[in-house]
Image (cartoon, rainbow, N blue to C red):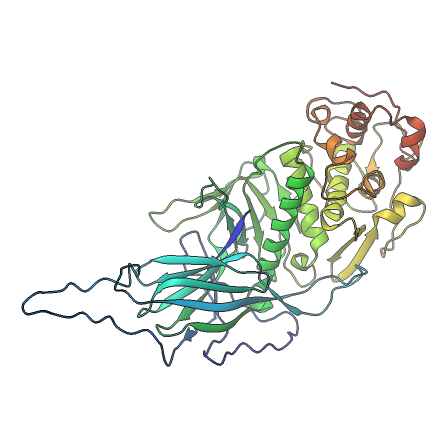
Length: 495
């Protein structure tokens, strides 16, 4: 499993919304809000108005070792700061609870709920001493952590970074699989092949005195960049779900850097960039190596489009990442929308991403067919299940019509992405999202990845060909009702 390495240094901003008051004090500590910075791979300090808060201790059970001298025999004093594991070195454990502010859509997926406080789960908290000795521990389901083996007589810094490293057995812990990059000074390039350079990862830090064992509650607020932690948690879960859904193709996903900053909107609003548009590079400190990501994803953090709080939008962009990883991504982009008919390959790409988003967010007991997001300060939703069951029912909050395929329009007609998403949802409804199914098998098939029929590039025709090739019992009578008017000819080109 991927773990999130927490290096606590983040860019502070004023809270966007009213926060529920949380007691961050502890009977045994004087903890206050952490210093919030953003760092590069070597924890370079980020400009911030935040001030550092030390956890000062008033007492400790640790005692200095009794180093006796016998006559003129000199006894060396061990260096217990840089190496606290010596037999005469006193050690201590530091414990605390890591929480973050968060917002999520309501159960009906029609609006955002107010700010709440939730635990930061399965994220690495690292303790760094002045001698650069480090130890780490992951938070549990309540956000609690305990780091032991620390020098008893030395101050330290707790750090949390918005990244996931390869901690699996046999993995490379220096390899960053997923991270959230500070996007304050980064934007989408205007052409392919341009090196996208970033300076910092989102991270946070907290100073702890030499006698402090219990730091109490450490709360990362919305104004401190808690949205970055929400993005990381969502992305990690969705990519893990994608690996389960596409288990038939055992592929190691590319590394991914997600660029985000509060109060900032990328020029594309939110978008996924395949390899040809990168690479995204985190510039190291002088003398240190750069950190390059295989793929990049940009998300809006502006109050008018707070995509970090909308799981559907985050998962939609990761749907492009999934298609790029386990299938084939159309080499086509450009403007698109719910009410527009676009090139069949673009409609396929966007429609699949929306279907994948809701599928990845669903469970068998709780399907999530309603796509929810916010744009231009307007919350909106589209119900894929309702459209799949009755294509003429516009079950959306938008004052627009989802364009449906024309039965007489032919195989290469322009299509609406909403119709493609609803068609896929209808075909995959009722299937356990934790298991591969016909839709996923067809999307990842050799047929889709290697052959082309219909419009140039992978499109809905290629998917339907793959579906019929893999499942010959899907004849015209059984499949046509789910096609919401698309005139598929049932003459597949099979490998």
